[in-house]
Length: 431
Image (cartoon, rainbow, N blue to C red):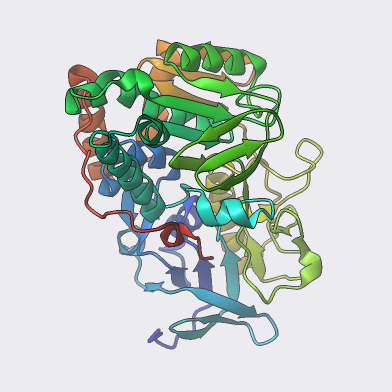
């Protein structure tokens, strides 16, 4: 890896997501050698991936170079690498570009799409957990529209103009709203010779309401917003298969579609080598104590989506969203600084800052404690929060400019098939 030898303690961080970046930022000036590893050379602001898919933003608006995150440190290094395994006995991390020893290891590999063992759906569905997948989805949707405008077969056109999303959490709801706004305000201008009354958007949820993690108020509001946009919502419905362009469910619902998007769940992205007893099998997440130490290890930590810290309030671990990851990253930095100075670490306490989802123009839902908001004010809060947490001033400025332009002109400027979608094998995730 060409990392210079040092007498300083070496801190290795695997993963440049919210948790890893939050930790690295707080440790770059500490008296350690910091090595950040990630298979990409950028951090992705995942809450806005759906806007890349729906042509509202370009990918560089929500991505930030990881080298810039740590550039102010004197003993900081970034290596673009895929981690293969961890050797706790020898305190080494093995990657595709070599091995590196560590004094402290932090696993912040996040989560990947969970298909619950259904290989047919995994092989055929689209997913949206990273930028390449978001671009694949954008290309596929635009290519299907180009095919729909030239086909003379009404059944084939209906298939190309049908969009089905499985999973009505924040990602599914926001993506359904984004596609619906394209249908209403943008695509008729691009394709004046096509009848968009034929275009259908279906949102399927296994629970009794959409946005199950949020309040009933948020679910009701979001349902009204989506239905007003023309989205067909199917609750208490589970997708069983997607093959030969047909989505089949546990009910009588069956939909033929060329665009099937899976947003029904996530699972941890662990690294091999850690004791199996420290891993929760179904969730694929590491059990950690109140200091984020993985059970059975003193110098190996896990933060963010890959970790499960069982508490009285969160018996199954904290929500797999950005805020717990950011807070755990910052808190672990404080604890590592205390530990390096021979002081006792302090337990992590999560401050719930609420949850939110946007459904489209002037439409969002926000839960903050016992407060509930819906509509324009919630949409304004959503915009402010997302701009605030974007990494880098340039990204904030470009995103704000794009949102302002889109709002004034009812337009989305990024409807480009830059990288044609080839086949579904391209979207399969690697840890």
